[in-house]
Length: 224
Image 1: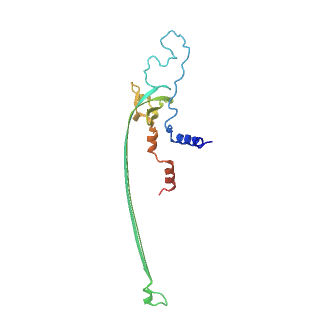
Image 2: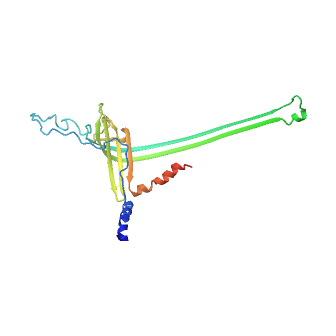
Image 3: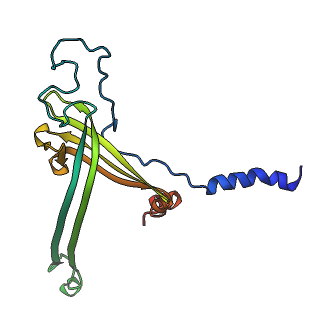
């Protein structure tokens, strides 16, 4: 076997290691992120009326989402701001002195050297501050994946945007009150309970902003 032939497996391994391996980022939104609506009856009974119980929508019902498999548009209007500061100060001091004035069998001159003097002092000062500002705007259309007994809708969905350097994932899930859904079948994200909003990416640009596993290992091993 020639040297070039022996190097082929190594070259293939290096090529596979250097090729981009983009993985879908993990998520914390409610699962599944999409479901199909219930199947309709294949045969529609002839009732002789324009009203049919097997129809997808009743005769006088609008197009707002209310069933599993329906879609609803979420207007993302998230904006949060938080500030926190703390200060603490503490101080303590003490002093003690003692001496022996008389002792049987010992002259007063020697007693002058027997004395005790002690003192201690302790101070503490602490200060901390934190601030956070976040803004998230846009729209995403999600799917009703469950209907609760009280009529609230559990929605979940994902939007993927593919670019030449990776993928962007926008995910949303939460509980929607049907009373908050507008006639345009939209709802504000601020009106969604248990809302979970994610914006993640995959690709070498996203990977370059993350700490490597070896660096994380040494950081955990040598925190100082």
